[in-house]
Image (tube, rainbow, N blue to C red; front, side, top):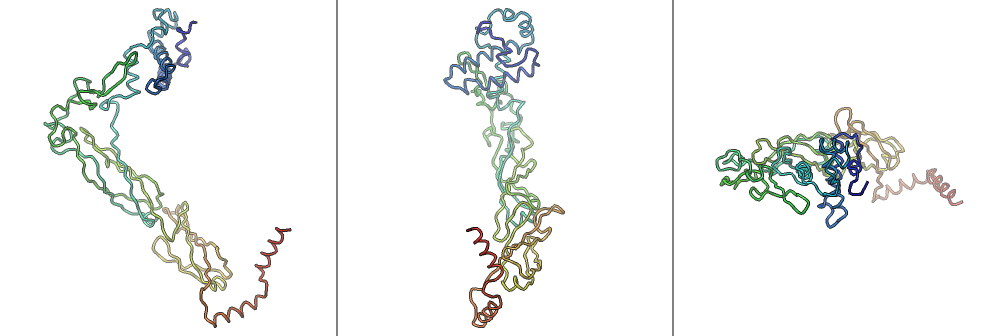
Length: 363
């Protein structure tokens, strides 16, 4: 088979018994890959694009496909692929879909979602809170009721583009969509615009919503507020508001998953003899925690259910001891410590085992 009569199934990479949906999907994928807009100044890509479009003009049409399956390229008039890029309406429609269908196309809804950030304190994160968010959004112009027209009625479709917002522009073999010059891509006739908004149908306005922040929400989480987003001209219902939550840090608590970690200073005598400490929690209460005798620096204790979260899924509070040695001692205190040190001997058990382990490493 000559190169200009390549099998269209092979060009599209589909089986001869492929479903029409499979064929169309393969065509759209290849057309997007080799489209001249995606490959400027690439003659090979342009030739490949022509070949793909020509192949689809045969097997993408049920009647042409049936003739090709029975007679081969003789069934399409003997032209094969030599005739270049086909100008079929369906081909252009597909390209129009892929590379810029009009903004007023009924199959596409405008993106009216709005995204804002809300910063909350660490304690608001841990306890949960109600937060009022103030922001600006586009709302319907009151005089024209959001229509953008002088009579406050829905604007008629543009007579030049039929409401698509775009028209076909021919460049050589290819047809490309471009903004309609009559409606500037809007798709509607605004020759008699509202004097207040000048046809936009919108105005910028302040808005506020009150959010319920769930306890234990993670930094970077997003909360959706229905109907809290932008309005569009002619749309009675706004989009949604997406609030990204940013959690401030804390000087005392550190969050790790659902657990809260903190460090509590403890006098060395309490660590040695045992005692108790008052520990603050994110709930605002103080809990008394027992410290066993001979507790070491860095020892951790767990307060169950005092972390973040809700109900039985709430985490724990991990308390780490930081043993503090007094910076200044009176003469009586020094003498008392010296007498105590004498009772320990020259080499405390812990110190002896430490130096022995070092010696073992150096052998």
